[in-house]
Image 1: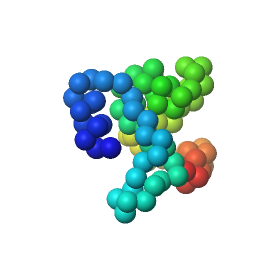
Image 2: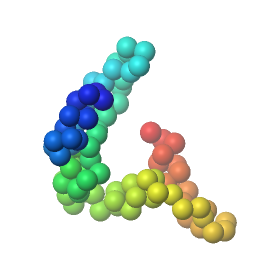
Image 3: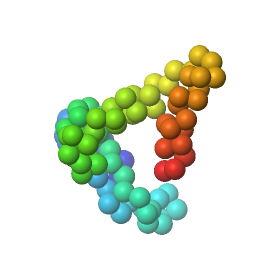
Image 4: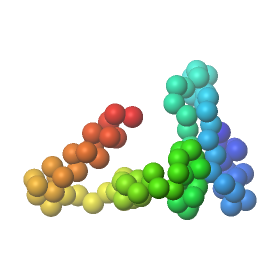
Length: 90
């Protein structure tokens, strides 16, 4: 996966989806892996096999995961509960 991703990334290629990735322990993983997806919204949609309309809430969510900012108080922390819950559900 790493070699394929690096080659596509260097060529500024499209998003990749590995439907049956193999783990480091040579076991087949149950979850598909998408890579090279954060450059454009179109790549995110292609990697997730979704329509552009279905991505409205994903961009702020992925941005918050990529560059988290500590909450300023309990109310701000509680407002992030759905994000934490979604991360732990995967």
